[in-house]
Length: 428
Image (cartoon, rainbow, N blue to C red; front, side, top):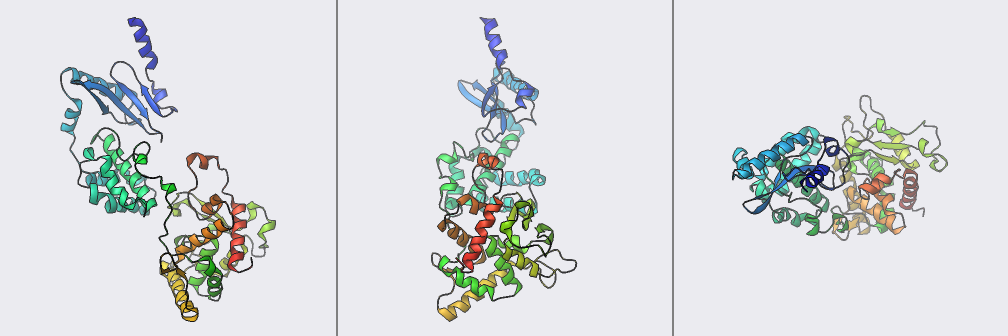
């Protein structure tokens, strides 16, 4: 019987190759009587845990994560804990005696200091810091990290979950990252109370199911053609950039920072008839991943003939790579586009008594709202939601769906944007 038990335990024993290999989510016990096991989460993260009994109560200890803690290290730690328990000691109490207690605000600073080099760029680092300082620290900043409950996390998220859903989702992810760091460094134990699946997901609606609220006043479809005719009479730099924003559903910042080396327009004498050309020779704007802070991935936009005509009208300033540059060779400001729309609104209101208003918000339309106008038009005209979302560089589908999508549907998107242009010009 004893031999059979030992064989069963041996069959469960982990190996370094197995620990570092491809494992499905779940628990992988090591055997040996120490209660050591490896937990693999749905997102692929791994943690060493030890389950044992102290004074009649079941307890679970975190022992760190591979590869920082190897299988041999985890076994050694588990064995040491077992010896302490036999001696009547509590390993968790002993561990806490050697590790200082820190609150969440301190953990944020230490986490950012540790992970700074791994963040994409300075702007991303600032965004991570700003969101945690603004939304999380005022509510849980003074709480010790080992005392933060699910309800504490909800106090941070609930006020902004439906009004600022995208921001709230990122705040949750960043709180989870800080608490994960705190667990790996030994400042707290147990489950991560900011974890989404099987935790926060049971208490808040899925972000994708929350009706997106407009934060930027949008141009009404019934006003779009009148607005476009008005804009087309203006030749100033801000008006040209605004036209390009509208034609492509782009963000103002992406257009204002556009450089000539991001463009593949082909020879000037090349025909602008995109319908007869294959995808490889289409005029293209390729926005590098470093500028795509929302997705972190390169974004391609096939350009309509009207977009190409706008670009070819822009003078190339010596020593300046910007397409829409100021007279001093610097990037034009967001206010340049905003002021153009504001002046158009005031002039139209004076002439027609209407202006270009978003009735839902009771405010004049702004450049960023043009993206919502385009999406309304695309939905009304039966275009697939994924195609329009990809055009405006929104993340579409889950990770599996994105992995199986082999194309960014650039030809289909170009056809859609050509139709959008015809609509603005009143041709259909």
